[in-house]
Image 1 (cartoon, rainbow, N blue to C red):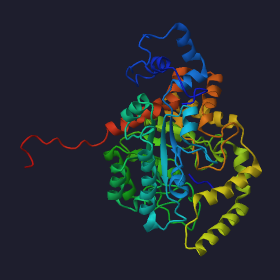
Image 2 (cartoon, helix red, strand yellow):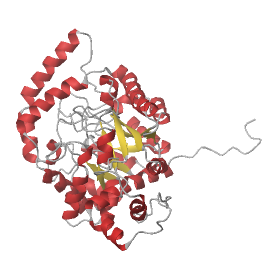
Image 3 (tube, rainbow, N blue to C red):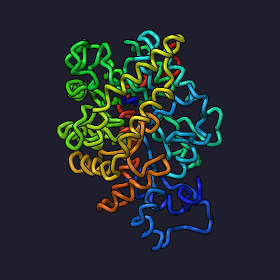
Image 4 (cartoon, rainbow, N blue to C red):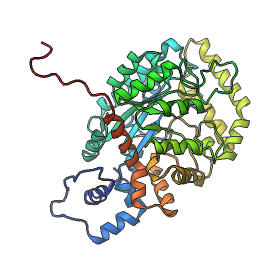
Length: 439
């Protein structure tokens, strides 16, 4: 989103992982032990796995539903297995933080690519992500369902998944939506910060210059229905409030908020109200907490908004430079400006992030919360979080507030796996053709 296995941490005994994962909502079947002599965990290992935050983190399936790293793949010709080089997520940092699966955001900047060029840019980002798997098949695995995430985990591979951020990428075509699904895309955020032709966005809902639709248009409801039929998760992050409620009336499957936080704590229109949180819980969906300081800390948000005129001026100057060259502004260049302005504010307190997890749990319930970092799509994470390697700090902080190992297994990945399975179970199954038919 644009806002304007190292042994030290990541390696874990196979025995401990299997013992703890088996207790996690029956998500995993028993996996083979690497040590043939070990048949069951000792009492000490059980205690460690249930009381020690690092052991809990290391024994979980950890899934992040949103990172904008594909911009780097496509524009910087950077590979996921390369050193971070200023980023927030790569293979090594994921392993150190025990991040097992990542939904990579396929985001097309509507300010840089005209509406009729969205599909091409979308396909380029999908290709750049798929190329990462081709280049490192020993480390990465493309996954398109929950079982494949678990299989990749058992094989010691990092699970690569994709989600489209912004319904403008389908260019008002259900055929393109189906094509993206065939290529491996498994969720779509109905809008980005821009209202498209069929759904209103929270990003411009107060802009009188933008044509709005009072939520979803009839075609927008068709999009949601088609996503249900395909088994593609409907993502309501970024949408306007009326769009959210239209989705909840339309969908026949659980929804996700891939990277949203709580509006009761931070008054950003991108965040979810308590009524929305309760509605997602009733829908059996899941809300993935965003790490962007402007969405988790009210003081930081106000300081960021106060910079807007100056920041926009700098971005406009940059855009003019690239327009003179006949080129779109590369994300790396615009992100550099945002990082410079964020540095003037400083880091948001780490506890602000934990407060949002805590609030979502208290309102929606432990079964309806997860992680949507927005790594590589935000100028700076909160204090203490520099990369995916720091994710265990979240587990430690939440357990310090009284959350259990079972709670953390759900939050770190179990809830998303449940929703992913439910969405795909609700998809329309192709007809079974009996022998001799259709000939």
